[in-house]
Length: 176
Image (cartoon, rainbow, N blue to C red; front, side, top):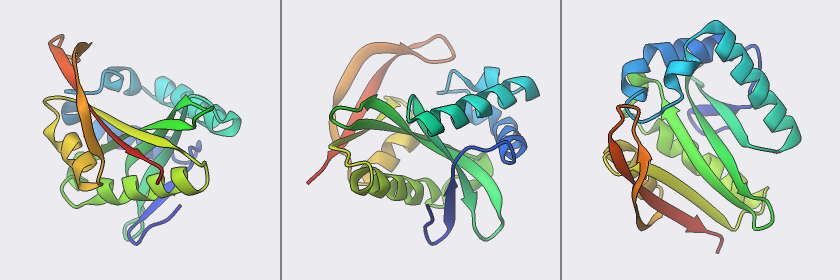
C-alpha cells in the first residue's frame, strides 16, 4: 500500500533491523502506553516477533502488521496493524506507533486512512476500532482526526506499563 508520503510494507526480515532501531530510538515514549516495548528491545526478540508477524500475515491470523516507511527518506518510521477481532463480521482493530522523531507530521493519520481504505474495500470490513488509554491524548486525537466516532470508555480495564490502572477509550467506524 502507498500514500502520497508513505509505503505500508508487510513484515520482512529485511526490515527487522530497521524496526528494532526505530523501537529503540522511541523506547521512552512508546513504553508509557505499550506493554510490549521492553520485550522488543533485543535482537533475538525482534527476530522472533518478525517471524511471527510474517506467519500471521501469510495465514491471515492475529495481527496483520505493516512497517511504515517514509518515501522521501526511505526510513522506517513506525508500524501499523490490523488486529483481527472477528473474521465472520469482519471486524478489525487498528493499532499504531510512530518513531518519536516523526511525531506531529500527520504520518499516522495518513497511514490509518490507507489501512482503513484497504480494510473496507479489500477485506470487506464492517467495523474498525481504535482503542487508546484514556490518558493517551495523541492516539485519541488520531482516531478523531480520521473520523472515528467515540463510542465510550471502558473503566478500569487495563494496567499501563507503569502499573497504574487506566480506562480505555473506544473509537469506531463502520462500513457505509
